Image 1: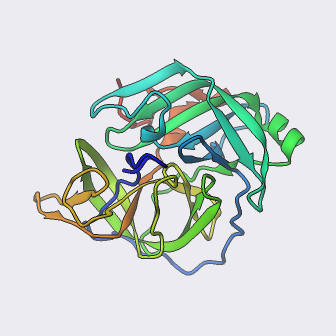
Image 2: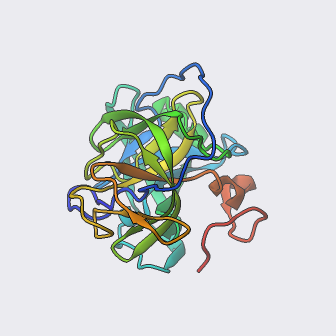
Length: 272
């Protein structure tokens, strides 16, 4: 898992598990930097749930290991924490448009997944009016093996293109464990600073995962060298291959007004 410049955590999805489904060919959406943000040490994206409306406060999606107070410990879940974190909003071409600020960490963990969700102090409507930027939409469908994807880093202003190779039953890195992680094909050779980048389905243009790690040195289950563990406990590694954490269940945790609630039906994110 790599933290941007410091080499902390990044992607957690070495998948030894076999893909369950294969993607059918589809026409490609236009994927740009619009909707992405740069953090001080990571990448992220301005996102909306399928039920979000323009008057709702904006949401920022990034990794748990990008949290400003430091990486959550294994088993730790952080909710409803004050924040003043700032994010640089990018144009379609990657130009810096301005700064948006959080007023709350709604959720952050590195248990089962690697995600932080921030609530902004401004609404989608205000951001659209001020900067001409609309949020990326979170998909509610499980990602599909074989699908073409784009990993869009606001920190580096770089886009990686590859496909979903399959899914890791368990991905272990350092003391952290991630479940049902997305494994990339070669091409998405992500680096420090790409942590938290949205993984965008190239056909729909929707966010299907959040980038978080890569096996850098061919080591097994160490920091920056995730390993895959299957249902039988068999451990495998994929040197040079990157991973992401699925996000399709996150919309189930949001209600009207982008209110975050871990007790909502269908919300399966780990609880404190």
